[in-house]
Image (tube, rainbow, N blue to C red; front, side, top):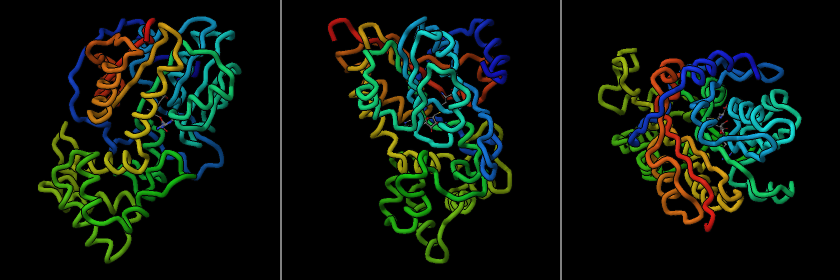
Length: 345
Ligand SMILES: C[S@@+](CC[C@H](N)C(=O)[O-])C[C@H]1O[C@@H](n2cnc3c(N)ncnc32)[C@H](O)[C@@H]1O
C-alpha cells in the first residue's frame, strides 16, 4: 500500500470507527478547498493527495475477500482500489475505472497487476464487463463527485480558489468546458441550471450578472466567475474580502457545484448506472455508494429502496466518525449507502 494512506488508515481502522447515521442535507464538498497542489505544468502525473473516505466502513460492509471480483467505478486517487486489491489478493480481479484521463494515468503505476485500470464512465460498466467476459461480480463501489487532486488542479477550474481556466469537465477530451457554455447559454437556462443543481436561491441574479459581464468580456476563469457570484449575492462582497465567518459555506460553493454537475451530466449518469449495475452483481454481492450532496443522495436512496433486485443494508446512510472528519474534512458531508443483490431479485 502507498505510504500516504498508512497513518490515516491505521487511525481509522484500528481505533474502530463508530458508525453514525445521518440525514441528508445540502452540503457539497467545498470547491473552495485547497487540498492539492496543481498537477498541471508537470511532465508526468503527480502523486495523488486524495485521502479515501470512510475506508473502514467500506471494507466492513463490502467485505471484499480473497479471489473475489470487484469494480471501483470512480477510482480517483486509487485509495479505495488499493484497499480492495489487498483484500481480494492475487487471485481476485478488480476493474478500476475513472472518467478523468489524468486520474487514470496516475492510477496505473499505483495498482497491482490483477487490477485492470480503464478510462471510462461508470455507466459503461455493463459494456466493459461483456468485453472482458467477467462473471457476475462480488462488489461495486461508487465514490461520487470529484477528488482532491481535481479540486486542487488550478487548470481544471473546479475550485473557486484557483485562477485557472473554467473547464470543470472530468474528461476534458469530450464535451465543452463551462466557460464555453457560459458564452452562449441564455439567461434563463443558466439561472435554472444553477437553481436545479445548486439549490441556489440567488440563481436569477447570478445569471443576470453573468450575461451582463459576458457582453463586456468572456468569462474564462474560475476567479472571474467567483467575483460575479460575490457581486450577485447579499454578503458576497464580504467573502471576497476574506470576511467569511468560520464554518459558513462560501457563497460561490453552490454555483460551482451546479455547473460541475451540469457540464458532466452527473445525475443522469448516476440514474443510468443505478438502473443497470444491479444486474451485474452475484446474489449477495454489494453495491456501495458514497455521495456528497443531497441531490445525489436522494437519487441513491430512492433507487436502492425501490429496486426489487436489491436489499438495502444501511437503513439510514452512514457518515464518517468524528476522528475521520477531523483528519479528513472532505469526509464531513459523505453519506454511505449499501445494498446487496437479493436472492429472488
Ligand atoms: C471522490 S473521487 C474518488 C476517489 C477514490 N475513491 C479514491 O479513493 O481515491 C471521484 C472520482 O470519480 C471520477 N468520476 C466522476 N464521474 C465519473 C463517472 N461518471 N465515471 C467514472 N469516474 C467518474 C472523478 O474523475 C474522480 O476521480
